[in-house]
Image 1: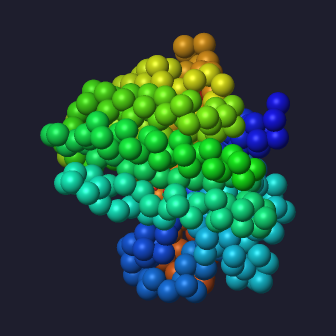
Image 2: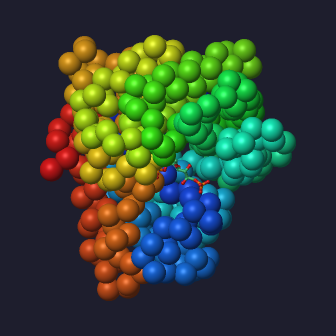
Length: 335
Ligand code: 5MM
């Protein structure tokens, strides 16, 4: 086993998941605004501190994805965030994409920026101790979307990203996010996700990515949020597993899910249903765990709201959310 495969396997260690704490300052600002907080560097530091300085997170988390700002920052008690993670036995990851940009000529579609400067940035991040990286593409579903050109271009970008990251000695997490916004059905989401993932792995092979040293971060297959379809957790689980079995090579060490704007409740219940269905089918070729941002942090943020006196309660809520999601990995209900 190569060292990178070993890290990838640690990222999906049994009974644990990955916290996505890598919101860009703009996205973090939206989360803070929702609880009446200003988007200042100090408030973002306090927001990160709420989660990364909670006692015992290493019991539930194998890794945390950080934003560049946090990777270089100290927690409120002066301990570098990286040290906090190391003390908890948690692998540090870093978001390396530079956000979205319109796809010229393709209305309503977006590409992800950052490939040109990636080798230099990866060398720095590896030297600072990052063990894995993450790159997010987005795929909109609409009447005529996604276009084959978008799916193709995004897949090549992800494959090139992955190869650069592996050459820098870190594990690439590939996140082609099929967005849940829209009026599309569950079956349309399944069709698009199948096409997207199949194209990603086809291009990874062409661009010489070592598939035994990548982690896939995918959307669950869910109906569009304006579809009017009721969220049926068992149907989501079956659609999601069908797509993964048809597209993800068995040598990939693990699959993690984003929550994508689902409620914390739905994300946890879908995760439990997916793992139950996989067990019922005799097991999946890869561990299936969580890498949520909103569905892990949202409940605690709503309790904390920036109030110093609510830090302990917010952290307790975070730990409860982590407990429920790790229980879901064993197929248990999210009660
Ligand atoms: C899809 O977003 C990722 C998972 O978060 P959710 O579970 O909330 O869907 C997340 O890791 C995302 O990639 C980061 O928050 C960075 O996103 P931005 O928009 O800030 O680049």
